[in-house]
Structures are given as C-alpha cells and as structure tokens.
Image (cartoon, rainbow, N blue to C red):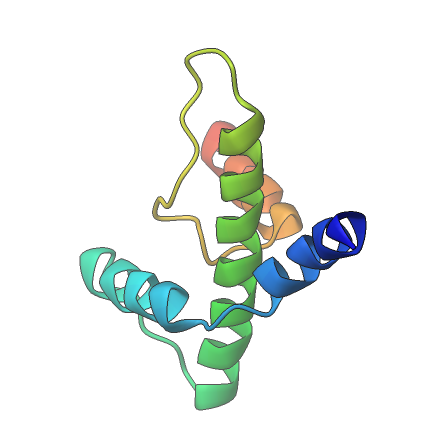
Length: 92
C-alpha cells in the first residue's frame, strides 16, 4: 500500500494547483516588464514559464553545491530561444 502511495506522489505533484505558479508568473511579468501580443502568446509563454520553473525546482532539489536555480528575465523562453538569444548577445 505504501509503495502504491509513493508511486502516486509524482502524479500529485504534477497535478497540484497552479496558484503558486500564477502568482510567480504575475510577479515575473511585472518585474521584467513583459508584454505579449495576444492572449494565446501569453498562455504559451506561461506554459514555458511553468515548465522552466519545475525544471529549476527539480535541479535545485538535486543540487549539492553552490548553484542556484530560479526565475530570471529569460524564464519565459524555451531552451532553443534562450540559446538563440545567447548567440545574438555574443555575436554583437
């Protein structure tokens, strides 16, 4: 029984309410003065933000050194978009 409950923990974590993420999103948008052309684009960016937030949480949980993971101005970008922006910065 206990092992069955352990198997359900990741599912429960994935399905938890998004209220915390919505609050963090609103702070992120305000802090970094983000604006999106359409509600659909904002919804897409929010989904990317949540995925990046969860990845940061997973990495922080595994971190044993001094690395810090969290939200920055690029938290609404996919890894590919971030790579392209990084290339642009270094090529200018």
